[in-house]
Length: 176
Length: 260
Image (cartoon, rainbow over all chains, first blue to last red; front, side, top):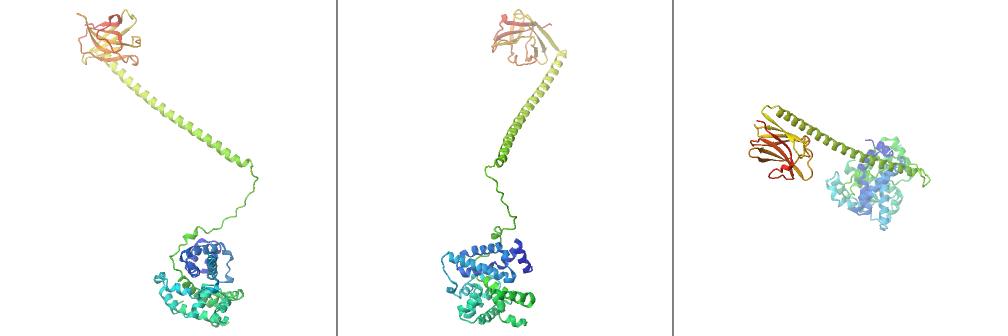
């Protein structure tokens, strides 16, 4: 099914269409949340909240502002951060351990049986420090280009080319 | 625009990450609309990020069913109507339904009672029909008995105590039984009972054939009594309940001799 059509139907409150989007993206949303809350017990609940929130705010999404996937991940990050604040974790973005996603993926037993699971593990194990930080900040933590540039003390342009290179390796491994 | 160069800048990776400014986002969006190659590239990057982020999910799979019920679908907005409180009309419905319910229960009770009554009356009627069939059968049998030439008919005439009384005995010697028609006897007083006797005349020897205990209840007053005696006469006396060993001759109501 054409993804743009699915999103359009979702915005018209079509539950069936939303189910397809859910099945496509719920694991990614959960992965993002898990990486922030670092507590497996609350991930599912927050993920459900994210998808209910997205449904209730469906009309606020606009393709002109970005990808649906990007929009969904933003809601997920905010929900996860809200959770850590409510629990008085008081984790500011700047204090986060930047290679955490690598540790999670490397030790994820659920991955072994999945498509590309082993490859993803190998990928993160071989990943250079710069790529670890860039991917963690940009995709998992939702830093802007400018924030990442300040955090990593790299010029804005370098963030751009580095992320291109790092994701390039990932795509090579995945074959996409 | 050099598409490959544009792609190579890494701007699309940041676009998928959501790390660009609003202005840059709009520019990329327009480029996507214009160039299918750019769209394809964005989708490939998204696919890679999707798989990478999904790999960080470490718990069991989820089901859409768990959130489905919490998704509010389009529902028409409900406009609340503000009515003044304590308006009598709002109670009228309740009063009406209460009245209706009460009368309904009453009607159902009435119906049940009537149905019970019908059932009872039907049983009674059936009983009566059965009885009348029985009576008819009995009457037919009696007619048969009276017409039989081998049956000896013995009229019993009223005696001193009760001159207007009468009775009749039909004696069937083949079956050693008598049919006593006692319709001509008055109702016995309470505590008393008629007793039937077979008599031999020379010398006078009475033999009790039994008491008519069901006299009052019996409608046709015809009694079948077995009699194996060589009777020469039949008599009926009034005796205390339970009967006597020998007849109380002062209370002899009817008497008749068998004509030989």
